[in-house]
Image (tube, rainbow, N blue to C red; front, side):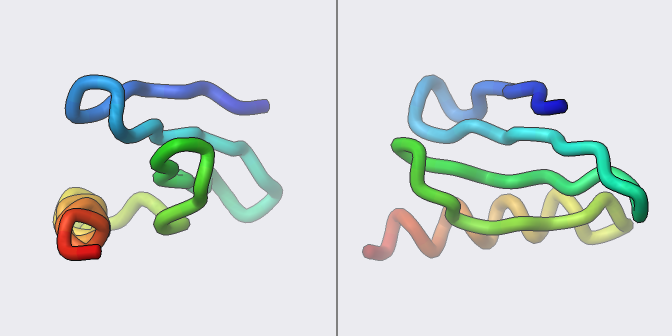
Length: 57
């Protein structure tokens, strides 16, 4: 099961997938996977870092 959340306008999507070990969050840009993260205390920082890395490319 996937849910999508639009981030930063329309440039990024955050897809949520339920698995046996918990939820995984996939950050995508233009349907390309940028980062896969799990929810923890550094979740927001990981997403911001991944977005910043794609801006540098």
